[in-house]
Length: 488
Image (cartoon, rainbow, N blue to C red; front, side, top):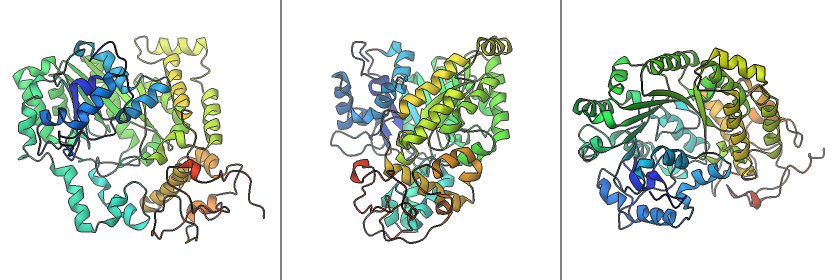
């Protein structure tokens, strides 16, 4: 990685990400799958890691960054950096200055299957085994905009497609032999899921490094949903030089249970506090919280950050980029203004010197504070305003949330009442309470509908203009429908 060019990335130069189906990218923020030299999609069940890293797509991205060009593969980082945040690229470059000018594989992100005990709203079957049935239902009953290919599959073909996310790393897979070439030589091992604490094969691989002594020079990172506490796995982790455990938590109480279906807030909180206790007693250990910010929880972020301050655990924000109907940049302008006003009224934003003193006295060796936490709110507001709202994605959020509630027998309205009131009772349209729960056929094409789809239309009360020219993802394809309330 060259010091002289600020577009270079340690993951592009020295890393690879192995996805659940065997395909590869450079990291979890990448948009494009890596290929072989002939341009075909690389898969470590068929190709070596070396073949993929020397492939056409890999070299294309590397050359672009070397020239200072913002390659679209890395658009998530470019977007976050434009908002003033430290993106994954910047953070990891700063933490791996010893890898400057290196081309050897030293960073590996691995998703070793989709075994999971949760069904998070912003997830899907590629990362959670519990999502399979609901995702098929989405695509065959109300045509989710997430993956139109699934709508053409029967159940047999769908199950075959689903199997690629759980069988790529079976015990007899050649992948393990390929991983053995690099496993003991890596500097950073970054493990995602599914839920990593439920994937047994990877723990055997990690213990192998502990037994050989290689782990004493390695940094291990886990991203977990926090529902599993297993002392035997903690003992394996203690054999590594440095360990960071990131708890994925996006809400509290019933909001946590809604967003992360299958989890229970009190149990996850108990596990988090237990891991914090271990980290305080174990050199080289660190426990943090990753808050994935989306349409669902952005309004309640100040309360959530305050809760983690009270636990003395560092929390950082991550943004949903896909699907677009959860991306906060696509919120209506008046909703963005409501979020800004709420943040600016929060205790975090207006903390006095006395507030800061009290927090310091409570946590004299604390990893949190009002100033650094306020920066998180500022980052969210800045990121939110980078792009103007997208009416299509906004409508998709309303539609998908309502249909998700219907399938899961949950209520966004009851779980996020203040936020719901702003979303569904805005000053430009009629009250949408009935519309949120009422579905009937409508002659107007739905914004997420593609040609020849016959689906229920959710927006019968506000579509007094015709949207037949609506193209998903293109806010310029239709006039702004928030111009005036329909005349009765």
